[in-house]
Image (cartoon, rainbow, N blue to C red):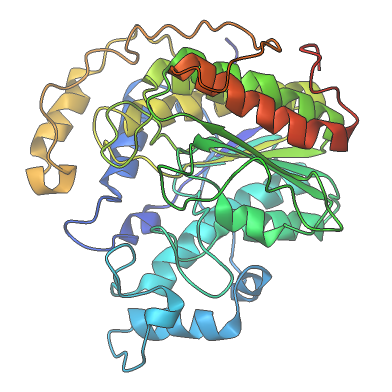
Length: 410
Protein backbone atom coordinates (compact mmCIF):
# COMPACT_ATOMS: atom_id res chain seq x y z
CA UNK A 1 0.00 0.00 0.00
CA UNK A 2 1.30 3.46 -0.86
CA UNK A 3 2.00 5.71 2.08
CA UNK A 4 -0.65 8.24 2.91
CA UNK A 5 0.81 11.43 1.48
CA UNK A 6 -0.01 13.88 4.24
CA UNK A 7 0.06 12.01 7.53
CA UNK A 8 2.02 13.01 10.60
CA UNK A 9 3.46 11.12 13.56
CA UNK A 10 3.97 13.45 16.52
CA UNK A 11 6.76 12.22 18.77
CA UNK A 12 9.10 13.68 21.33
CA UNK A 13 11.10 11.67 23.90
CA UNK A 14 9.91 14.07 26.61
CA UNK A 15 6.68 12.05 26.85
CA UNK A 16 8.74 9.22 28.35
CA UNK A 17 9.04 11.35 31.49
CA UNK A 18 5.34 10.69 32.25
CA UNK A 19 6.06 7.96 34.79
CA UNK A 20 4.23 7.82 38.08
CA UNK A 21 6.45 5.34 39.93
CA UNK A 22 8.67 2.31 39.47
CA UNK A 23 5.75 -0.06 40.03
CA UNK A 24 2.92 1.86 38.34
CA UNK A 25 1.20 -0.12 35.54
CA UNK A 26 1.35 2.81 33.10
CA UNK A 27 5.04 2.69 32.28
CA UNK A 28 6.24 4.75 29.30
CA UNK A 29 8.50 1.88 28.29
CA UNK A 30 5.49 0.78 26.25
CA UNK A 31 5.87 3.92 24.11
CA UNK A 32 9.57 3.36 23.55
CA UNK A 33 8.98 -0.26 22.56
CA UNK A 34 6.22 0.79 20.16
CA UNK A 35 8.34 3.38 18.38
CA UNK A 36 11.28 0.96 18.11
CA UNK A 37 9.08 -1.82 16.74
CA UNK A 38 7.55 0.55 14.20
CA UNK A 39 11.01 1.74 13.19
CA UNK A 40 12.44 -1.77 12.84
CA UNK A 41 9.50 -2.84 10.67
CA UNK A 42 9.95 0.21 8.45
CA UNK A 43 6.51 1.56 9.35
CA UNK A 44 7.72 5.08 9.99
CA UNK A 45 10.59 5.09 7.49
CA UNK A 46 9.86 8.00 5.21
CA UNK A 47 6.91 9.11 7.32
CA UNK A 48 6.78 12.65 8.67
CA UNK A 49 7.80 12.22 12.31
CA UNK A 50 7.68 15.64 13.93
CA UNK A 51 8.30 17.15 17.34
CA UNK A 52 5.32 18.96 18.82
CA UNK A 53 4.90 22.61 17.97
CA UNK A 54 5.34 25.28 20.59
CA UNK A 55 2.80 24.72 23.36
CA UNK A 56 0.85 27.60 24.89
CA UNK A 57 0.26 26.69 28.52
CA UNK A 58 -2.86 28.86 28.44
CA UNK A 59 -4.53 26.08 26.45
CA UNK A 60 -4.67 23.97 29.60
CA UNK A 61 -7.52 26.22 30.73
CA UNK A 62 -9.64 24.72 27.97
CA UNK A 63 -10.10 21.64 30.15
CA UNK A 64 -8.72 22.42 33.62
CA UNK A 65 -9.24 24.98 36.38
CA UNK A 66 -6.48 27.33 37.47
CA UNK A 67 -6.48 25.80 40.97
CA UNK A 68 -5.97 22.32 39.60
CA UNK A 69 -3.15 23.39 37.30
CA UNK A 70 -1.47 25.11 40.24
CA UNK A 71 -1.80 21.95 42.33
CA UNK A 72 -0.17 19.86 39.58
CA UNK A 73 2.70 22.33 39.30
CA UNK A 74 3.29 22.45 43.05
CA UNK A 75 2.98 18.67 43.44
CA UNK A 76 5.50 18.07 40.68
CA UNK A 77 7.95 20.53 42.15
CA UNK A 78 8.74 18.21 45.04
CA UNK A 79 7.98 21.00 47.52
CA UNK A 80 4.29 20.40 48.03
CA UNK A 81 2.81 21.27 51.37
CA UNK A 82 -0.80 21.38 50.26
CA UNK A 83 -3.49 18.72 50.57
CA UNK A 84 -3.68 17.09 47.14
CA UNK A 85 -6.49 14.62 47.83
CA UNK A 86 -9.14 16.98 46.48
CA UNK A 87 -7.22 17.18 43.23
CA UNK A 88 -7.04 13.42 42.72
CA UNK A 89 -3.28 13.40 43.27
CA UNK A 90 -1.08 11.46 45.66
CA UNK A 91 -3.14 8.26 45.58
CA UNK A 92 -2.38 4.81 44.16
CA UNK A 93 -3.72 5.67 40.71
CA UNK A 94 -2.08 9.06 40.41
CA UNK A 95 1.04 9.25 42.57
CA UNK A 96 2.96 12.50 42.53
CA UNK A 97 6.22 12.51 40.58
CA UNK A 98 8.84 15.16 39.89
CA UNK A 99 8.14 17.43 36.91
CA UNK A 100 4.62 16.01 36.61
CA UNK A 101 3.25 19.21 35.08
CA UNK A 102 5.94 19.35 32.42
CA UNK A 103 5.54 15.67 31.44
CA UNK A 104 1.74 15.89 31.30
CA UNK A 105 1.91 19.14 29.34
CA UNK A 106 4.24 17.47 26.83
CA UNK A 107 1.53 14.92 26.07
CA UNK A 108 -1.03 17.69 25.65
CA UNK A 109 1.30 19.60 23.36
CA UNK A 110 1.83 16.56 21.18
CA UNK A 111 -1.89 15.89 20.69
CA UNK A 112 -2.56 19.58 20.16
CA UNK A 113 0.22 19.68 17.57
CA UNK A 114 -1.53 16.95 15.58
CA UNK A 115 -4.81 18.85 15.79
CA UNK A 116 -3.15 22.03 14.54
CA UNK A 117 -1.54 20.19 11.63
CA UNK A 118 -4.94 18.93 10.51
CA UNK A 119 -6.58 22.32 11.02
CA UNK A 120 -4.04 24.21 8.92
CA UNK A 121 -3.92 21.58 6.18
CA UNK A 122 -0.38 20.42 6.92
CA UNK A 123 -1.73 16.92 7.53
CA UNK A 124 -4.95 15.01 6.99
CA UNK A 125 -4.11 12.31 9.54
CA UNK A 126 -2.05 12.70 12.71
CA UNK A 127 -1.21 10.41 15.62
CA UNK A 128 0.24 10.78 19.11
CA UNK A 129 0.58 7.38 20.74
CA UNK A 130 1.47 9.01 24.08
CA UNK A 131 -1.92 10.76 24.20
CA UNK A 132 -5.32 9.49 25.20
CA UNK A 133 -5.61 10.73 28.80
CA UNK A 134 -9.38 10.46 28.63
CA UNK A 135 -10.17 10.23 32.37
CA UNK A 136 -8.72 13.56 33.53
CA UNK A 137 -11.47 15.86 34.81
CA UNK A 138 -11.70 19.61 34.93
CA UNK A 139 -10.53 19.94 38.52
CA UNK A 140 -8.87 16.62 39.32
CA UNK A 141 -6.69 13.82 38.02
CA UNK A 142 -8.29 10.44 37.47
CA UNK A 143 -7.35 7.00 36.25
CA UNK A 144 -3.64 7.66 35.50
CA UNK A 145 -4.58 10.86 33.64
CA UNK A 146 -3.35 14.28 34.77
CA UNK A 147 -4.26 16.57 31.86
CA UNK A 148 -6.92 15.67 29.31
CA UNK A 149 -5.07 16.14 26.04
CA UNK A 150 -8.10 14.99 24.04
CA UNK A 151 -10.53 17.51 25.51
CA UNK A 152 -7.97 20.30 25.07
CA UNK A 153 -7.35 19.42 21.41
CA UNK A 154 -11.07 19.18 20.63
CA UNK A 155 -11.73 22.52 22.35
CA UNK A 156 -8.94 24.12 20.30
CA UNK A 157 -10.37 22.69 17.08
CA UNK A 158 -13.79 24.08 17.93
CA UNK A 159 -12.20 27.52 18.10
CA UNK A 160 -10.34 27.08 14.84
CA UNK A 161 -12.80 26.25 12.10
CA UNK A 162 -14.52 23.06 13.25
CA UNK A 163 -18.05 22.78 14.58
CA UNK A 164 -18.78 19.06 14.18
CA UNK A 165 -16.28 16.67 15.71
CA UNK A 166 -16.83 12.97 16.41
CA UNK A 167 -14.82 11.39 19.21
CA UNK A 168 -14.60 7.56 19.21
CA UNK A 169 -13.13 5.80 22.24
CA UNK A 170 -12.35 2.06 22.12
CA UNK A 171 -10.47 1.82 25.42
CA UNK A 172 -11.78 -0.89 27.76
CA UNK A 173 -12.62 1.88 30.24
CA UNK A 174 -15.36 4.41 29.59
CA UNK A 175 -14.15 7.73 28.15
CA UNK A 176 -15.70 9.63 31.01
CA UNK A 177 -13.48 12.72 31.06
CA UNK A 178 -14.08 13.58 27.41
CA UNK A 179 -17.80 12.88 27.73
CA UNK A 180 -17.95 15.19 30.76
CA UNK A 181 -16.06 17.96 28.96
CA UNK A 182 -18.59 18.05 26.10
CA UNK A 183 -21.69 16.80 27.88
CA UNK A 184 -23.77 19.78 26.85
CA UNK A 185 -22.02 20.72 23.60
CA UNK A 186 -23.94 19.66 20.51
CA UNK A 187 -20.88 20.24 18.32
CA UNK A 188 -19.12 17.16 19.70
CA UNK A 189 -20.31 13.57 19.42
CA UNK A 190 -18.64 11.36 22.03
CA UNK A 191 -18.89 7.62 21.38
CA UNK A 192 -17.42 5.09 23.79
CA UNK A 193 -17.29 1.29 23.40
CA UNK A 194 -16.17 -0.16 26.71
CA UNK A 195 -16.51 -2.99 29.19
CA UNK A 196 -19.79 -3.25 31.12
CA UNK A 197 -19.61 -0.44 33.71
CA UNK A 198 -21.17 -2.72 36.30
CA UNK A 199 -17.88 -4.59 36.35
CA UNK A 200 -15.16 -2.07 35.49
CA UNK A 201 -14.05 1.32 36.79
CA UNK A 202 -15.05 4.17 36.37
CA UNK A 203 -18.48 2.49 36.51
CA UNK A 204 -20.00 4.97 34.07
CA UNK A 205 -20.92 4.80 30.41
CA UNK A 206 -24.42 3.35 30.45
CA UNK A 207 -26.53 3.71 27.28
CA UNK A 208 -28.85 6.03 29.20
CA UNK A 209 -26.06 8.62 29.42
CA UNK A 210 -27.08 10.67 26.38
CA UNK A 211 -25.72 14.19 26.90
CA UNK A 212 -27.04 17.40 28.43
CA UNK A 213 -30.25 19.24 27.61
CA UNK A 214 -28.62 21.24 24.79
CA UNK A 215 -26.88 18.18 23.32
CA UNK A 216 -29.24 15.27 23.77
CA UNK A 217 -27.98 12.24 21.84
CA UNK A 218 -24.40 13.44 21.43
CA UNK A 219 -23.15 11.13 24.18
CA UNK A 220 -23.27 7.56 22.86
CA UNK A 221 -22.30 4.64 25.08
CA UNK A 222 -21.95 1.02 24.00
CA UNK A 223 -21.07 -1.30 26.88
CA UNK A 224 -19.97 -4.84 26.07
CA UNK A 225 -19.95 -7.80 28.46
CA UNK A 226 -16.82 -8.83 30.29
CA UNK A 227 -14.80 -11.44 28.39
CA UNK A 228 -16.17 -10.33 25.02
CA UNK A 229 -13.97 -11.72 22.21
CA UNK A 230 -13.19 -10.05 18.90
CA UNK A 231 -16.36 -11.21 17.13
CA UNK A 232 -18.78 -9.89 19.76
CA UNK A 233 -16.90 -6.65 20.38
CA UNK A 234 -16.82 -5.95 16.64
CA UNK A 235 -20.50 -6.77 16.34
CA UNK A 236 -21.30 -4.19 19.01
CA UNK A 237 -19.03 -1.57 17.45
CA UNK A 238 -20.46 -1.96 13.95
CA UNK A 239 -24.06 -2.12 15.20
CA UNK A 240 -23.88 1.38 16.65
CA UNK A 241 -20.79 3.44 15.88
CA UNK A 242 -20.80 3.83 12.08
CA UNK A 243 -24.48 4.72 11.94
CA UNK A 244 -24.39 7.52 14.51
CA UNK A 245 -21.12 8.90 13.16
CA UNK A 246 -22.43 8.96 9.57
CA UNK A 247 -25.62 10.68 10.67
CA UNK A 248 -23.70 13.24 12.72
CA UNK A 249 -21.56 13.98 9.62
CA UNK A 250 -18.43 15.22 11.41
CA UNK A 251 -15.70 17.28 9.81
CA UNK A 252 -13.07 15.33 11.72
CA UNK A 253 -12.81 12.13 13.78
CA UNK A 254 -10.72 11.90 16.95
CA UNK A 255 -9.98 8.33 18.07
CA UNK A 256 -8.78 7.16 21.46
CA UNK A 257 -7.16 3.79 20.73
CA UNK A 258 -6.56 2.29 24.15
CA UNK A 259 -5.58 -1.37 23.84
CA UNK A 260 -6.42 -2.58 27.33
CA UNK A 261 -9.32 -4.53 25.80
CA UNK A 262 -6.84 -7.33 25.07
CA UNK A 263 -7.39 -10.71 26.72
CA UNK A 264 -3.98 -10.52 28.42
CA UNK A 265 -4.39 -7.04 29.88
CA UNK A 266 -3.93 -7.24 33.67
CA UNK A 267 -6.42 -4.48 34.53
CA UNK A 268 -9.52 -5.37 32.47
CA UNK A 269 -11.69 -8.33 31.56
CA UNK A 270 -12.25 -8.16 27.82
CA UNK A 271 -10.88 -10.80 25.45
CA UNK A 272 -9.81 -9.11 22.24
CA UNK A 273 -6.72 -10.12 20.29
CA UNK A 274 -4.21 -7.81 18.66
CA UNK A 275 -5.99 -8.67 15.41
CA UNK A 276 -9.32 -7.51 16.81
CA UNK A 277 -7.77 -4.26 18.01
CA UNK A 278 -6.20 -3.75 14.58
CA UNK A 279 -9.65 -4.29 13.02
CA UNK A 280 -11.10 -1.58 15.27
CA UNK A 281 -8.34 0.85 14.29
CA UNK A 282 -8.88 0.18 10.59
CA UNK A 283 -12.64 0.62 11.00
CA UNK A 284 -12.15 4.07 12.51
CA UNK A 285 -9.67 5.04 9.81
CA UNK A 286 -12.07 3.89 7.10
CA UNK A 287 -14.93 5.78 8.72
CA UNK A 288 -12.84 8.96 8.66
CA UNK A 289 -12.08 8.35 4.98
CA UNK A 290 -15.79 7.89 4.29
CA UNK A 291 -17.37 10.73 6.23
CA UNK A 292 -14.81 13.51 6.65
CA UNK A 293 -12.35 13.31 3.77
CA UNK A 294 -9.89 11.30 5.84
CA UNK A 295 -9.38 13.87 8.62
CA UNK A 296 -8.37 11.73 11.56
CA UNK A 297 -6.56 12.52 14.81
CA UNK A 298 -5.58 9.35 16.70
CA UNK A 299 -4.14 8.96 20.19
CA UNK A 300 -3.17 6.06 22.41
CA UNK A 301 -4.68 5.46 25.84
CA UNK A 302 -4.80 2.47 28.17
CA UNK A 303 -2.83 -0.72 27.69
CA UNK A 304 -0.84 -2.46 30.40
CA UNK A 305 0.55 -5.59 28.76
CA UNK A 306 3.64 -3.61 27.99
CA UNK A 307 5.55 -5.99 25.73
CA UNK A 308 3.27 -8.45 23.99
CA UNK A 309 0.30 -6.17 23.29
CA UNK A 310 0.86 -2.41 23.33
CA UNK A 311 3.82 -2.25 20.93
CA UNK A 312 2.11 -4.47 18.35
CA UNK A 313 -1.30 -2.81 18.50
CA UNK A 314 0.06 0.72 18.38
CA UNK A 315 2.47 -0.17 15.61
CA UNK A 316 -0.66 -1.16 13.68
CA UNK A 317 -2.11 2.22 14.68
CA UNK A 318 0.95 4.06 13.37
CA UNK A 319 0.76 1.98 10.19
CA UNK A 320 -2.92 2.84 9.69
CA UNK A 321 -2.18 6.55 10.03
CA UNK A 322 0.79 6.63 7.67
CA UNK A 323 -0.85 4.28 5.16
CA UNK A 324 1.25 1.14 5.54
CA UNK A 325 -0.34 -2.30 5.74
CA UNK A 326 1.45 -4.47 8.31
CA UNK A 327 0.36 -8.05 7.75
CA UNK A 328 -0.42 -9.70 11.12
CA UNK A 329 1.76 -12.61 9.98
CA UNK A 330 4.81 -10.34 9.82
CA UNK A 331 7.60 -11.74 12.05
CA UNK A 332 8.77 -9.72 15.03
CA UNK A 333 12.34 -8.52 14.38
CA UNK A 334 15.07 -10.26 16.37
CA UNK A 335 16.59 -6.87 17.14
CA UNK A 336 13.38 -5.83 18.91
CA UNK A 337 13.46 -8.97 21.04
CA UNK A 338 17.06 -8.16 21.91
CA UNK A 339 15.96 -4.69 22.99
CA UNK A 340 13.31 -6.16 25.28
CA UNK A 341 15.92 -8.45 26.84
CA UNK A 342 18.00 -5.41 27.80
CA UNK A 343 15.18 -3.75 29.76
CA UNK A 344 15.09 -4.51 33.51
CA UNK A 345 12.27 -6.93 34.32
CA UNK A 346 10.73 -4.55 36.85
CA UNK A 347 10.04 -2.08 34.03
CA UNK A 348 7.98 -4.67 32.18
CA UNK A 349 5.33 -5.38 34.80
CA UNK A 350 6.14 -9.06 35.24
CA UNK A 351 6.70 -9.68 31.55
CA UNK A 352 8.17 -10.60 29.17
CA UNK A 353 7.74 -14.40 29.30
CA UNK A 354 7.58 -15.79 25.77
CA UNK A 355 7.86 -12.89 23.33
CA UNK A 356 5.42 -12.66 20.43
CA UNK A 357 6.61 -14.17 17.17
CA UNK A 358 4.41 -12.23 14.77
CA UNK A 359 2.47 -8.98 14.54
CA UNK A 360 -0.81 -10.80 15.03
CA UNK A 361 -2.30 -13.69 16.96
CA UNK A 362 -4.33 -15.44 14.27
CA UNK A 363 -7.42 -13.83 15.75
CA UNK A 364 -10.69 -14.33 13.92
CA UNK A 365 -12.05 -10.85 13.21
CA UNK A 366 -15.09 -12.04 11.35
CA UNK A 367 -18.37 -11.25 13.07
CA UNK A 368 -22.09 -11.74 12.60
CA UNK A 369 -23.75 -8.36 11.99
CA UNK A 370 -26.39 -7.40 14.53
CA UNK A 371 -30.04 -8.06 13.78
CA UNK A 372 -33.04 -7.23 15.98
CA UNK A 373 -33.38 -10.62 17.67
CA UNK A 374 -35.60 -10.81 20.73
CA UNK A 375 -33.81 -12.55 23.59
CA UNK A 376 -35.59 -13.83 26.67
CA UNK A 377 -34.44 -11.52 29.49
CA UNK A 378 -33.54 -14.62 31.49
CA UNK A 379 -31.38 -16.02 28.70
CA UNK A 380 -27.79 -16.34 29.80
CA UNK A 381 -24.68 -16.33 27.71
CA UNK A 382 -22.39 -13.67 26.34
CA UNK A 383 -24.04 -13.56 22.90
CA UNK A 384 -27.44 -12.72 24.36
CA UNK A 385 -25.89 -10.21 26.75
CA UNK A 386 -24.09 -8.49 23.88
CA UNK A 387 -27.28 -8.24 21.84
CA UNK A 388 -29.12 -6.78 24.82
CA UNK A 389 -26.43 -4.10 25.23
CA UNK A 390 -26.61 -3.32 21.52
CA UNK A 391 -30.39 -3.11 21.53
CA UNK A 392 -30.35 -0.84 24.56
CA UNK A 393 -27.80 1.51 23.02
CA UNK A 394 -29.68 1.68 19.73
CA UNK A 395 -33.06 2.13 21.44
CA UNK A 396 -31.78 4.97 23.62
CA UNK A 397 -29.78 6.97 21.09
CA UNK A 398 -30.84 6.13 17.52
CA UNK A 399 -34.18 7.99 17.58
CA UNK A 400 -32.35 11.13 18.69
CA UNK A 401 -30.45 10.98 15.40
CA UNK A 402 -33.45 10.14 13.24
CA UNK A 403 -32.33 6.50 12.96
CA UNK A 404 -34.49 3.40 13.30
CA UNK A 405 -33.22 1.25 16.18
CA UNK A 406 -34.86 -1.83 14.67
CA UNK A 407 -33.46 -1.46 11.17
CA UNK A 408 -30.05 -3.20 10.84
CA UNK A 409 -29.32 -1.06 7.76
CA UNK A 410 -29.11 2.01 10.01
